[in-house]
Image 1 (spheres, helix red, strand yellow):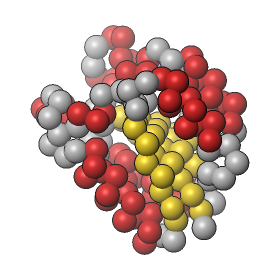
Image 2 (tube, helix red, strand yellow):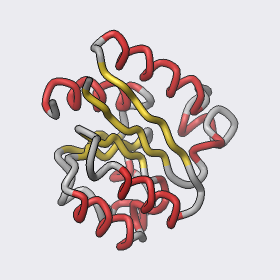
Image 3 (cartoon, helix red, strand yellow):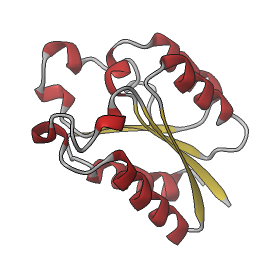
Image 4 (cartoon, one colour):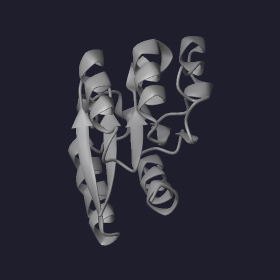
Length: 144
């Protein structure tokens, strides 16, 4: 069975209540339940993880090294600041898709630089939570 990881970074545990005009009303749990069902329909396993701590995100990426076909990651604010997360993703050799609910390129200047996008297989930004579904569909079809 193919295995994928969904990794969400800082503050994404607040989805549904944090700035709903930007991020919508769906919770992270809603997203995880939906994607888990999609994975099952495709005979795949989806492991979901969220943390506000950079070192925990690095550790979960490291754990993907041996048995994970692909990673879907919304690194949150660490997109714009974490060389450690970049090095972890680069180091494990597992293909990943970077996802952002909002369009980071239409926001504040500091949000427009991603430390990860140049090493990602793809970047989905600004399509709301549908971006997660598109990323999982792509991962299932591309990272077998």
